[in-house]
Length: 531
Image (cartoon, rainbow, N blue to C red; front, side, top):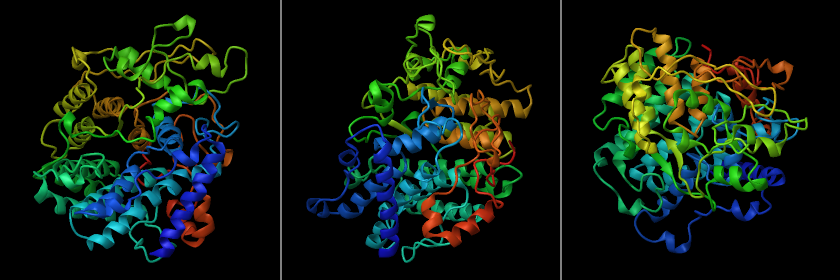
C-alpha cells in the first residue's frame, strides 16, 4: 500500500510542480493545497474519517482546482468537445487546440486523476473492510473517473491495482469495461436498499448529492448506460452493451430522469475555474466560448444560448453571439489576443456550479439505445424530446416551439480574420421519424452535446465513436506527421504520460501493444473506430 501511495503522491507532486511553472497564477501552491484534508476534529463521530476521504475523491469527478481544471476540463474536454477554446496560441507552438500538446502536458489527465481516485479509495476500503454505503459511493467515483482517463488514453491500470504494488499491468479495454461494470453493479447492489434514504452524516463530505443514496444509484445507473452506449458499435461489444443498458434502465431505481437528478458541484478553490480563466486570468483573455456552440445555437435560435454565452463586444458583431474557432494562430494586425477576446465569452458567475452529469444525457442515451432496437422504456423520439425538455428545465430556458423547429445551424462568419466557414450540419431540432436512423442519431448527438455544456468530455467520446456532432474543422492542425491526425476526424487520444514510461515501462509497452502498437494522437480506441 505504501509503495502504491508514494508513487501516485509523487506523480501528483511532479504534476503540481510542472503546472505551477506554466500556470496563470503565481499563488498556485496555496490554491492547490488540498482543502479537504481531515483535521483531528473531523476524525470524531460516525463516518467522519471515511467521509473525509470520500470528499477528497469527489475532485476526480470534476476538477475544482484552477490549474487542474485548465489542463483537464478546459484544454482536453472543453476543447475537443467543441465547447470552449482559448482565443490565443496557448503554450506557443505547442497547444491542445492545434493538436500538438507537449508530451509533458499529455500526462496531466492520468497523473492528476489517478491519485485523486486511489488515495481515498484504499483508505475507505481499509476502514470499511470493503463494505457499506461510503465504499459503494467510492466505487462509483472510481468508475466515473477511470472512464475519463480511459477515454483519454485507452487501456489503463485498473483491475490489478490493489494497493500492494503500483507497477501493475494495464487492462485491455474489453477487460477494463468488464471490471468497471462489475464495480458499478457492486455499488448499485450496496446502495439500492438505501435508495429512499438521505444520510445526514454524509452531507458535508458528499459534495455532489449530500448523502442522497437514491441519487447516487441513479447516477451509477446512468453511468452504466453511458458506458454501454460507448461500446455499442459493432467494432466493440454490442451484446454486452445492450445487456448493461437494459439493466440500467429497467433497474428498480433506474437512471436520471428529472433536472433535480443532475450531478453538479459548487466546490472550487475560490471561484469557478472556468470563470477564472474566462474573466480573471490575463484580464479575462484566456478562454472563450467555441464557434461551434454559437454556430449551431444561432441557427436554431436556441433559447439556451443567452444562458450559455455573453454577446460579442467586437464592433462589427457587437451584441451578437460569435464564438472563437479552435486552432487559431495569431500573427497579423487584426488577429490578436485582444481582438479575439472581444468575441463571445462563457456566461458564468464567479461561483456558478460545474456540471458533472446532466439528467438530460440519460434521455439522449436512452434515445440512442432505442434507435439501436434496445428496450429503453420508450421510443427514440419520445426519449429525445424528453431529453431536450429536461435540458431546458435544467437551464431555466423556455422551450417554446423548439421541438417542432426545422431551423438549421448557421454558417460561421469571422469578423476578425479570414476564418469564416459553412454550417457544419443541416440537421434541425425536430425529430423527423421519416429520416434515416443515422440522421436521427446525429440529431440526438447534437442535442446531447448542447445539454452537456460546458462539460465536453462526453462529446469528445461521441465524436470519435459516431462522428457527431459535426464540428468546424480545426484552423491549424500542427499534429506531428507521424501521428496521422486528420483535421476532419480530430484528436483521437492523448499519448501516455512520461511518468508511466519511467516508472512502469514494461507494463506501459504492453498497453501500447493493446492499442495496436502506436502511442500516438491519431490512434483509435477500441470503441472509437466507426468515425
